[in-house]
Image 1 (cartoon, rainbow over the protein chains, first blue to last red):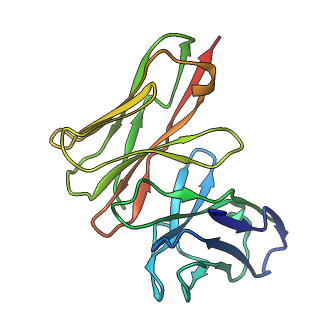
Image 2 (image 1 turned 60 degrees about the vertical axis):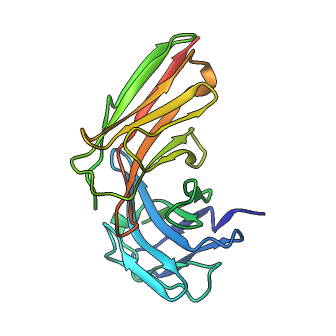
Length: 113
Length: 111
C-alpha cells in the first residue's frame, strides 16, 4: 500500500490563481480530511468526508472547495488564492470512527505571493 | 469543533528520565481521543486511540490513560531517548466524526 499520497509537495501561486491539491489513498478508508498547519496554530480542519459523495466543513473552510466522487480521492481546490492561504496542507484518512488513528500524507507546502 | 488543551507547550527531559504531559477537554461528549507523534519534517503518526473512561494503551515505552469524567488524558514516556524528541498531539473525534487537534507538547530529550 502506498498509504496517503499528496501532490504536489511544493507550490508557489500568485494571488488570485486557482489550483487543486491532490490526495489519494489506497487503503479503502471511508473518512478523509484536509488540515492546514500554521505556526502556533496547530492543525486546523478545513473540510472532511465520511464517504464518497459526502463532504462537510471543518473549522476553516472559507476559500476552499472539496469533492469526494470516489472512495480513493479527495482533492482540495483553492478558488482564488490569497496570501492568508500560505500554509502546509495535510491530507489524512482513517478506515472509520473506530480506526486506529488517521494516516497522514506527506504534506504540501503552499506559498501564495 | 471541540476545544482541546495541551500542557505544557514544551518540555526538556534528560535522556533516561521519564516524563508525562496532559491533554484536557471540557466535555465527555466525544467519540474518541487520539494521540499522535509528529517528528520534525515528517507527518503525524498515530500512537493511540481511546474511547472509554479508564482506557490505558501502551506502545513500547510510551503509554496513555484516559479519564473522561474529569476531562483529561495523560501521555507517559518512560526512560526517554533522543528518538522520543517530537511534538505529541492530542485530538478529539466528536460525535460528528470531526477530529479537532490541540496545539501539541514539544518534547526535547537531551543526551
